[in-house]
Image 1 (tube, helix red, strand yellow):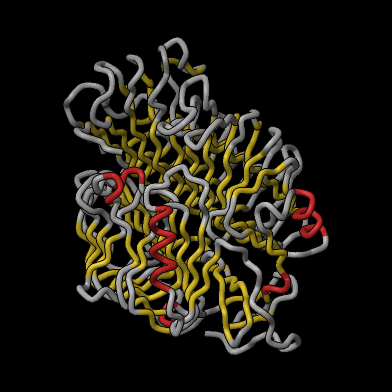
Image 2 (cartoon, rainbow, N blue to C red):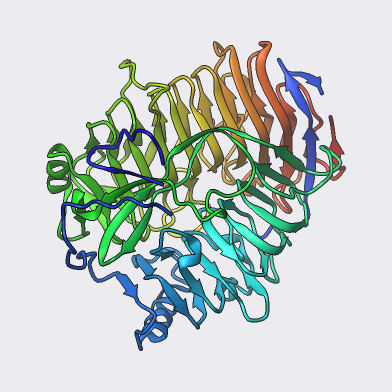
Length: 589
């Protein structure tokens, strides 16, 4: 039981890559090589089922049409990479003997307090058959809070970015690829009884999970607080092992218990050791009754109605759908929970920022997509405001599973996807993507300069993916930043070298630490390139000041197969690390 909960009105409770060229670099210091709960809310009686709208399917074990409904959703979503459908498949506690295929924009979740409360006696799977088993575009799907017991002992989860698996028990083996490429991915608070087979996964981030054995290491794999992390030492094996996380919190999840609905909010953990949070049969945290949430539906709610609910002190639950916003959603009250269910997508209709968290502390944001609109937006998502100090170490702001996109689905333009001005923000599993394929894609069409800009101090990110923006992908100006795993592809489409030059020379580094920063740490930083439209060079993949407090460990650049001959990256970091332009493969400690 937690002694005190700061949340209001809560109850304390227990792409196809082809050939590759690579360069890895080891520890850098100042760019020098070196090495279940017993308490429920008692005031309100059993309530009616919440109105989550037509795209949320709630199942119970005795229901006769579970499989046909799941099959219908998958048929619609299997290949709908840029489609408008958004769905959540929610399973009340019990046992279900069926398979659950998971397509695009589909969120599968158990509704128990513990993963063992819901058992799928079958597979919960995705295999990219729609793309001839090439899973490099298997994005935008999620599984959480259930047990999967496949009859043959094998569950396939062949995914790439923005496809998190959380709080899941696999009673068997987990395969992370099918018969083609894959470029993931994110695993947290999961238990796999058998082996994890990474297969073709280019990179992967795992946190506070365990398995019998991990098989397969490719380019860059980072394990934080994981049991039986694979052996091997960098750079001969692209493995980064970190025993404990300094500050972490599991993502909130839905619970249906005794006819009542809640959002369970796990507590923060400091210096968190290895393993999952739930294997001892405990579900610590706060149960927030669903009545304390404004349940928004696309087509019914707009920015005005959502902001009015937030201003009145409601938490916010966004159901599946696409929300065209004519104004910014503003979170101004501390300790507010913003919970996305089924990949709700926020789209600024007139160029205004989609979401701004102005509250100084304790806000939790999870499970959101934000898509740039046809009118250019300066910043899609903001945490804090420029020049207004905010944030407290005692009560950080938390962000889980944040996805931003510019183009691919249609017209989209933004200058920056996410800006963090506040201090003491902890985030995980960000994918910030300027589209490299789909509709409205081109150097002057889906424009975006920067994926992430961090100005606040003491910001920590676990699993940061930023791709294809046209200048620096990530700019970090705040002090004492920490990043556990970074994956980035430079833009494929600079038209000329003259059009793609930074103040420091040819091209833009992907990961840029501001010149005035004195202290910054990062582990497992990977930058890839594949220049298709012109012969262009980036002088470096990572750019940092030379300061003793800048500590970057396990760094690499890769050349993806193809691209224009003679293009590439000269150095891994500043002037260190060999080039990835010609065919030779180089590694540097």
